[in-house]
Amino acid sequence: MATILVVDDSASMRQMVEFTLKEAGHQVMVAEDGQVALNIAQGAPADLVITDVNMPNMDGITLIKELRALPAYKFTPILTLTTESTAEKKMEGKGAGATGWIVKPFNPEKLLATVNKVLG
Amino acid sequence: MKHLRLPEFQHMKSYWDPIQNVDVVRILAGECYVTHCHELITTVLGSCVSACIRDTATRIGGMNHFMLPTEKVQRSDNGGTHGLSADAAYGSYAMERLINSILKYGGRRESLEVKIFGGGRIMGGMADVGLQNINFVRAYLRTEGLRIAAEDVGGDFPRRMAYFPATGKVLLKKLRNVRNETIVQQESTYLADLRREATQGGEVELFGD
Image 1: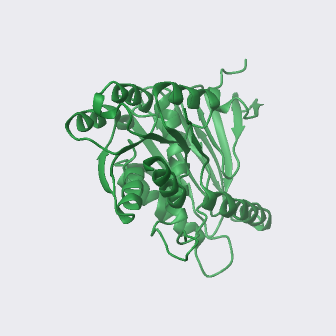
Image 2: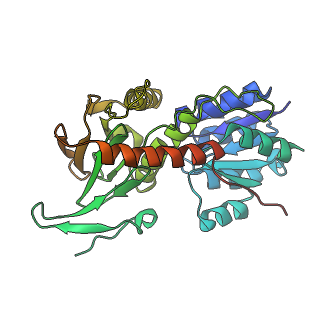
């Protein structure tokens, strides 16, 4: 089972994603924005990061770029989970180093299937 | 003079109201509209709910209009559950779409003013769909730490409402003497579509190398 860092400024979303992942047996760390997530990531390695895109303090795209600059996160899978669905935003995410893009509303089974896929 | 629309809402149609002296955008079930201009957003609510949210400092705000799919638990192929309702996933999405659009264009979470409307008991059947919608929105806002500044919810009648995001003013008419059939029909169609969409979730794309 993996250690997963979940980043979302919505407390409701953090709770739902955390619940889904924990029920599947994963360990979960949560952060309410990119800056908090980056602080956590610098102190503790994660096997996977699932991040929202639009957040205060540090958005998801900036977080992905910052994480990719950390040696420990250079190859860590990073998924976005967001209401953003435009091709431009996806390209921005891909350019920043995202592994995949999940559009809300999220479906627990789809999320877990994607998590399993990127964790190999 | 036409207002400059926010990019996500370019497709929304509006008309000029010469009495209110304002551009009016009418939203339907499942839609959401956010503006930074002096516009009026209108809708008619049966058992659906609308959250009217604005940033009191930047005066950007908007309204959504939704109901829950009321599918209790998402089941996996082998009959197991992930214990998370499609209601929570879809309702959170509907609320987040509105809040995110406001925050994305300069709103701040700490200066949001929230008002909620609708959730009437106008559909037949045992379950009070309107009350489920009201309860969800209240619980969601509590979890998010957002206080409800005003509300007009419940009852056994539809509501016609109009919201000025720039000022926060709401005009509301309780449609006690209007036949509900049209609204019930519209909401039933919306609910059927919603149940199909909400259980599927959004798209997933893996980027590869």
